[in-house]
Image 1 (cartoon, rainbow, N blue to C red):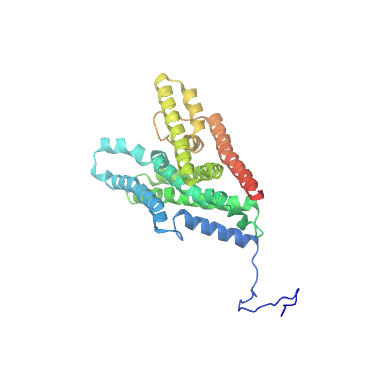
Image 2: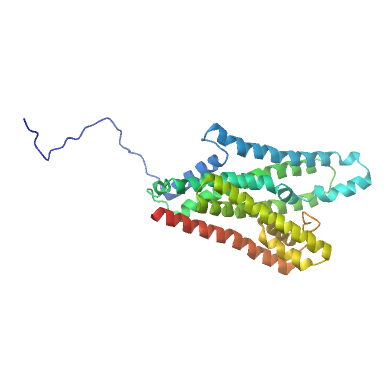
Length: 305
């Protein structure tokens, strides 16, 4: 017996057809943002993926709690001790500058999760099977990483500020410094997210991306700090201001100091004038938009292969 050729059979194996309302591009982008934000903290991933982000978030709380404790003890100190501590205890944007190593490790560890793996394993093409543009994909990933970075820095700052409000310090000055610091933290989070995302997309290997981000940020920070220290000792103010352009932490710190009339996080960092403040704003835009542009180009190239 022979089977007739060209005949087929459709089998009903019980799959239910989708009869609901199909959501648009905005819903897809929002879902990608929420999923990416969860992944930044290891939610929805393996147990070991939760260790690093939550450990860094917990460690970042320690200096904030120490500063908050010092504020609560101010009334029990002598007037001279209060005068010595009041400046650092009101310098809120000094917090991300003093803890930049922890913040750098967080950004370096989470950026490859959002950018490197999709590119390396070619799963990125699956995202574009839906009506989601390459630019929207990158922006949602960046928004999630920026939100995560902002949260791990802003929450300790807020605890520190809340402790200040419960004491007899000048509340108006602390509020002004806190709000200026929050703006600076938002800017810093954007710059760190775009830069670490760009490095991760270029390397595509998670371990290499983590190392590259840490080395790039910490090496430039060390060089900038050394140059600024030498410039401070030799009274070359222009050299110290110029050196700050080459690291995200220092350029944002100088911008916040000049734009909001805040003290600098370090004595070796000169306070910028109006011209330098505008220059730092341009440099921040170059850091952020330049990195985002390279990241989008890398994503588009990978998706077209």
